[in-house]
Amino acid sequence: MTAPAPSREDLSPSTAAIDAQASAVARTTLGAQAAVGTYLAVAGQDEEAWYDTDSVTQMAETMARLVDNFSVTAARFADQFIADAVAWLSGKRFRALGVRNTLGMVGENGVREGVSTAGLFGRAADTYRYQQSLLDKAFVDDVRAGAPSPTELASPLDAAINRARKAASTNLQLAVRNQSSSVLAEAGRRDLITGYRRVVHAELSEEGSCGLCIAASTVVYRTDHLMPMHPGCHCVPVPITKTRDPGAAINDADLSRFYDEAGGTSGVLLRETRYKVDEHGEIGPVLRPFGAPIRTAEEARRDANRRRTAKTDEQKIKTLQRKITVLSQSHAVASQMTLTPEWASRLRAIDARIGRLEDQVIRLGG
Image 1 (cartoon, rainbow, N blue to C red):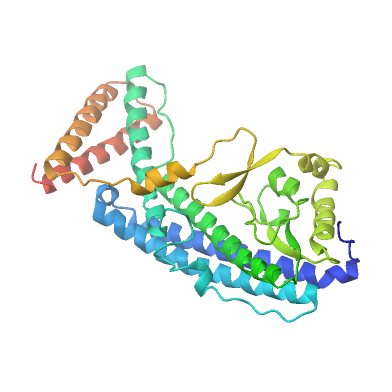
Image 2: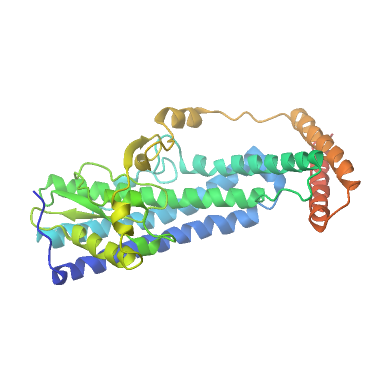
């Protein structure tokens, strides 16, 4: 049976606490993203470092330490918020659990299944290399096709930074979700609460809360179930007792304010969004639209077990020489073209890249 909706006066304390929790986590997340972005913007300037196993490991471990520290901070916010909410709603004393036992050995195990935090951020190198290969291929293809202007793509460093920032955001979501789950489960075992629901926070998203969160905000979760999430989710889990369910009324009020004023029907339509809860191989239960792809547990295990074999210097030299040959040939053809300012800029960039590749060959003894 659904608990009766409380009055606005009754909601005032919980609304303020929920808003404060969501804002605190959002600020911490922005801090984590800024930390890894700033670090990579400096450490990632050396192109050669992205192809060196030791250098990539060092960058990944540094980012892991940064993000794990922010994750602990965010988890502490969640720990105290849920404990305070349980005490307020149940009218009984309930203390925060602390993050030591619920986050595990931060920096070693991390907050994901099957991959350490450092292993996660090591994937930024995969993104860097892939983006560089796309740029090289686009240059060769554009020259071959006689394109009037070169294809514009993000730089490899920007692509790597973007991936690292997204990974940091998701990790903080996981830290908050996992810590909240531990506290909710403990409160449930003590019969202080009966479940919880997600409270959406459209104001913290650049485009407002998505239909996945709004549709799922009508669901009451068991205290021993992890709240399904998705990248960029700002929802806050709020406890429910037999007689009190503040989250339901808060969601109704907030959705009216953010959507009904804008168009009158947006909130209603978003509540009708069809979604599915799936088990993601690394982050657990997730919300996703029907038909959207998902990373399975088997894929996560396969990637975690994939061993990277460092190339010998001889192999590195051969790879670099092949790249130099292909780029130099296309550069020679492009130099005979009528150059637009865009093409002139791209050729200067390719000149610089060929020079860096040649320097690498020399340092390797080629």
